[in-house]
Length: 149
Image 1 (cartoon, rainbow, N blue to C red):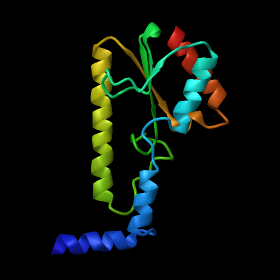
Image 2 (image 1 turned 30 degrees about the horizontal axis):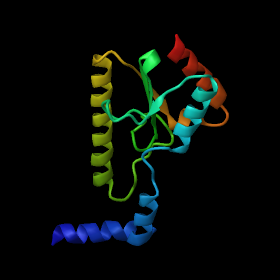
Image 3 (image 1 turned 60 degrees about the horizontal axis):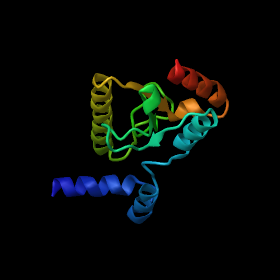
Image 4 (image 1 turned 180 degrees about the vertical axis):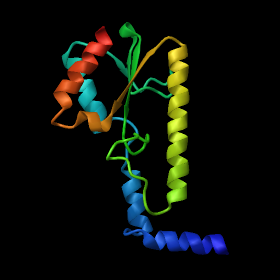
């Protein structure tokens, strides 16, 4: 009874109804996000060919460049706990749930990165905040140089 009351109180703190919240959450994509498309379009314009979301590799990397033995993960700052980033803030409602979920995401990511590195892959993590308009071109040029080194 106590737990149910606590959940009701937390749900009441949300500014959106549960239906509206559910609708918003359903729109969040796990592939073909705008940051992923930005990186893919840039790499393609530079003549690099890749596979996207290849299930054969741990963590299903967003971009796999086999020729360069490199995988790229394009991570959202919130969903992957980008430490020190202004875009990562723990929600004020249902905090325990979100903390558990986001920590689990970060742990899973680290495990996948370690597996790929152990298999000899060069793992590059691109954060959503690194692709802001004011720094995008410079960052993508550095990314390209890191891949072809």
